[in-house]
Length: 136
Image 1 (cartoon, rainbow, N blue to C red):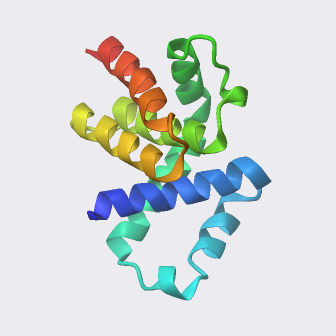
Image 2 (cartoon, rainbow, N blue to C red; image 1 turned 45 degrees about the vertical axis):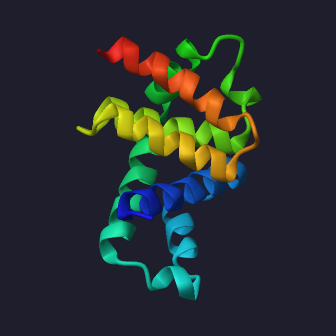
Image 3 (cartoon, helix red, strand yellow; image 1 turned 135 degrees about the horizontal axis):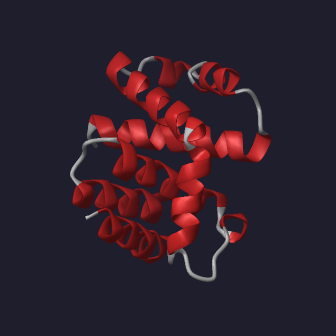
């Protein structure tokens, strides 16, 4: 697994925790890396995961509006916590990072397959594809 994938997964864990608990983001980051195994992760992965986590939170209003505009018949509140936060991560990367959209979308689909339910990959792909088409 690549460094960016690992960082995305860590950011997903932190976003999930924030979404469920509403705790202070700095506390979530500190607590996440308090685990001895996670504490060993490279600084590069930690830095990118924290950047993703905090930037998604900072831009969450515009990210959520973008997702909802492309998710027909699905409000964010009705989406699973995992799918919602994978979409937030990938939408952030599509809107605000200079990354190759097919790679961002594929990574989100794969993470959705790993952590979501049997329909997560298809659901995530449909919404991110619609967002990407609008950006072109």
